[in-house]
Every structure is written in C-alpha cells, then in structure tokens.
Length: 332
Image 1 (cartoon, rainbow, N blue to C red):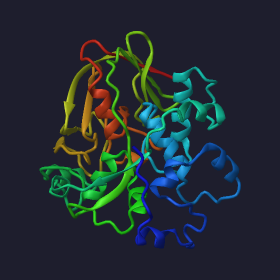
Image 2: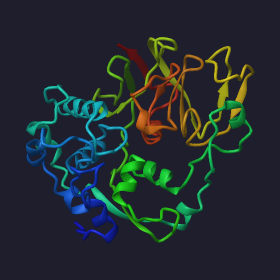
Image 3: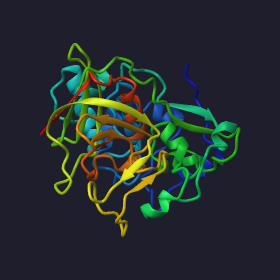
C-alpha cells in the first residue's frame, strides 16, 4: 500500500532555497518514491551536487533491499553507491561497469515497494542505553561500562541504514527523543536468509561478497580493509566463531599504538566500540569481520587489518555464516 504525505511546515521551510542547499530538490515520501532514472539523468550537469538527490535515495534503498549494500543511505553520489551498482550488475549478469544506467534501473525498479516509510518513535527507542559522549582515548573508554549510541537520532539512523545527517534533513522539526514522534525513514526491507558457504574479500575493490553453496551471490557489502601499515591477511581461512556485542582487546604490542596507552586494555561492548556491534572471528588469530562506530566512513579509510562493515551489514552476515564451515578468501 502506498502512503502519500503532504509536506509538514518544517519540511516546507527546509525546502526553501538557502545558500547551503540552493539546488535542493523536494525530499518528501512521494518525491523519493516516484523518483525516476530518466529525470535524474536529465539533471546531471545542472546541479552542483551539494544536496541529497531523491533519485539516489531511492536507488540506494532498492540496492540495499536487493542485498547489494550501498553502505549508508545518504542520497549522495560516491564510491559506495558505484560499488553497490557493480555488485548488483554482478548478481544480475549485467555488464559490470558500476554505472547507473537504464539497464540497471529497468531491472532494479521491478521492486515497486515504497522506498520510504513513516515510523513512530517508541518508548523503547527513547529509553535506550545512551551515553553522553565517547572519549577518543582508549584508557578512558576502558573505564566505561558501555560504548552505546549518543542519542536516539544516531540509533534510529543505523536502525534504518541511513546517514544521520539525511535523517535530520528529512525530519527537520522532529524531536527524536520524544516517544510518539513520527518520522520519515528508509525502508531497508528484509535481511537475506540464505546460508553463506564462502566469502570473498576483494582488497583491491574494497568489497565483501558472500556466496551460497550453489555459488550464487547472497549479498555484497562495501568494506574497509587493511592499510599498507596494517594489511589484511592473504589466502583462505574459515569463520571460527561469532561474538555479538563484543568487548575489544587492545594490545599495542600486537595491534597498534593508540595515544599514550602502552599497556593492554579491554574496552566495553557497544555499537560505538572499535569493532561495533558484531565480531565474526576468523581462524587466523586476531583477524575478523566486524562492525564500526562510523558507518559513513566504510571503505573511505583503512582498518587495522580486519574487515570492517556497517553494523547492520555485519549483523546480517553473522546470521548467515556457519562457524567451522564458511570459508573466507582474501583476494586482490
């Protein structure tokens, strides 16, 4: 069922031209839900690209629902959207060039479901286990009990696979800390359910692709992978174990030097911990596939040797792998 909303006064005020977003297009549920490739194509070269585009929001939502993750949904062009398009082309047997074109859109737009939905903030959302701030220093973090979200807006953005800035742009007048508030959010759809037999981590492409036992792609995610100084491993290993809400063991003699912390530390769990909300342990000691406290930075920086995904992508993958059976191959 399609639900069309009229713009709120706050949203209409936001849509008025401003120096920062003088080329902003309407970001209503209807505008995003009906955004089409042909219109977006015609706009290319006419906009400065400084504001989220309704078509790119819809495109990113549909790619995510097809399990070709774009990372965070932000409505902006970028490498992660290109990677998601490339992964979708690979899934569908299309020429793999990463370009948003009519062929990709024709197949992707078969999903006619609403890209956006109205969500009512619950008492549970508001009463979450939030922390006022998270210090940079690991020694200070080690003294905390929980490395949770800073506020409901940050939690809700992750819940719906969105960039927090986009969430706030879509809902400029919303009180995210008040139960009963209705907000416009992405509809990320259902997570995949097919079991994963093998995973390929492509270091050169900055991408993780998971396959079933028939060698069909189950999902593809953008990934942050090791740097030259702290490279990811090579070769093939297996998934060893799963650890939701993991603590983090810091040892400068094994890992890296953080600040002036020269002794081993154990950091508490939480979605804003160094490895996020999920750790998928690999058979090579100290290496894993894990979440992140900074989803908008996935594949835009380097890790300390592990494979970093958004928290939601890491959690979805963890439900599909089988310890002792799922293989993980590092290539590139």
